[in-house]
Image 1 (tube, rainbow, N blue to C red):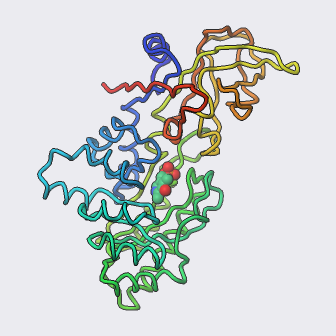
Image 2 (image 1 turned 30 degrees about the vertical axis):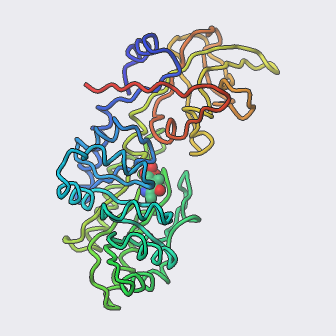
Image 3 (image 1 turned 60 degrees about the vertical axis):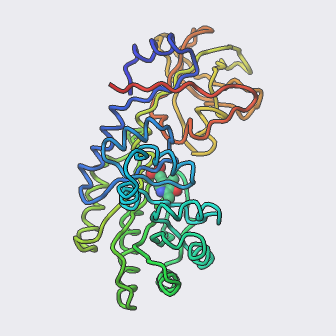
Length: 380
Ligand SMILES: *Cc1c(COP(=O)(O)O)cnc(C)c1O
């Protein structure tokens, strides 16, 4: 994250609420991912934070991209729009996966000329892709255990392992090419066994497909879910990487291309929110601070992402347990009921929250007329 002095300076210069992105941290996270998982190409999941400058920095670092809508696709496409058409098509084929298993007909139509990889997980989608995006490469999304993930995804997407090979053969019969398999173990997965189990399940499906005569698969997409180090209970990334590497090397030959779709891991630690105290009250004996950012805005992850963020003061002083409220009139707009903050903070004082780069500004709304935080980039 950015230095405290810098955050205060930026807040003075731009006002609050403020969302500060440190691009050195983005580059470092990308490098860490590549260092510990050398076999795995990182497709940044744009959903986590679709800011064009973030996408550009990761593009420059060599990242590939996971998109789930045409607007997300176009944000990435902007990075390559000046390349000649052929180079652009090759880049899209190599470096974009459209990883939303359910796509509208219109979306498939728009996507088709770009010839991208798309995920699917049922027969209905095969019929749609055949009709509207027959030039796509297919990746079958498998349903895998999401035990212990902060955000569960397995109830919405994924083919059961028992039907997986039937769905591959069905797509093949429809004249489509299934390039490989994908899964998602759940977001912020601190239970590393989820990855081990999922890779083993994918290896079983791979083998069954080969045994039943389908030999065109050449990629495995191990999805997202790589945990951000929100607190000390999250075990180091290199421990997870060691487990993943061991399973990949044991179960998949060298010529299989391995990809992953890290979202949170790349951006969470790169974002810091700075807000200002706009009111102060004592309610039921408890000190309450009201700030100019809240759960409808940068702190939306409290609701949508099941994430908790700590508020920190720049000023030091005798602390007590306080409530921190957002600025809207909705009682849901509570950042925290139990933050240890100095009791003598005043109107105008600033607070900050670290590790808030993922699933935060991305789901901010203009609810109740309060504008979203201004985004400032530190990119030396
Ligand atoms: C949201 C999502 C991701 C990113 O997940 P993280 O937990 O942020 O790494 C990757 N792939 C798919 C298909 C997703 O839906």
